[in-house]
Image 1 (cartoon, rainbow, N blue to C red):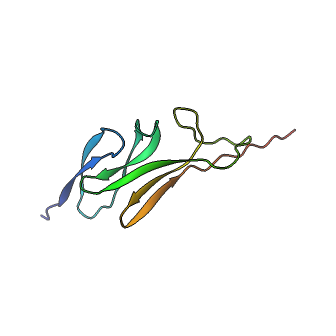
Image 2: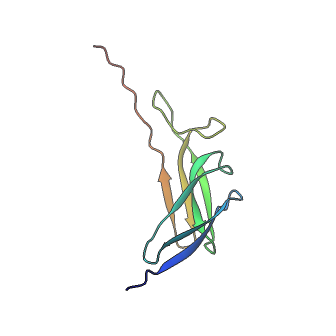
Image 3: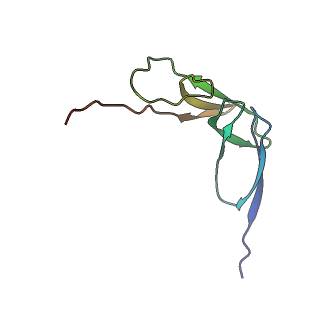
Length: 104
């Protein structure tokens, strides 16, 4: 019988007090996300304990017309959430939904 190797991963959020623990297969690269209170309710990644990074929300810099965009808890349009580490960055992009008026 082959033993299944699992690893325990401790997660934290640099913007709110949320912490979590997961047990995963040893070779799996996974990510954990949550609705972050520190980023006004936006979907944000959690980081493995020991990883130093900052997670920031990027507000939309362009005009919001009739399209449906992601809003934070304060009603501000948000374009993305970016995780910045010493060796690079990751981004969650919130694409707008276009609206078309059509007559039948």
